[in-house]
Length: 111
Image (cartoon, rainbow, N blue to C red; front, side, top):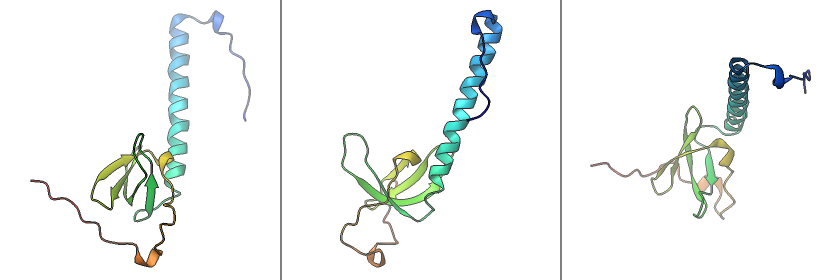
């Protein structure tokens, strides 16, 4: 998995430790974003997706937008969710064929 280096942190100054910490945090953030981006690419705009919010039943809707860290899903009931791509799944077969899946979603009017 790459070159393994040992860093003797006992001999680093406070400033060097802070710099090392910042570089580690940035690298971890980059790896997380790369995984999220790869997961986003498993789906395309218009795909029907499902996810299960904590404490609620499965939500099904249409992926409508890629955001920086999330995707936007509009549910069949018109709710809008920003969801981490890692939570998305293909909806379970609910007995209807893809030909009968709605391609129009009724949105609630904001007053």
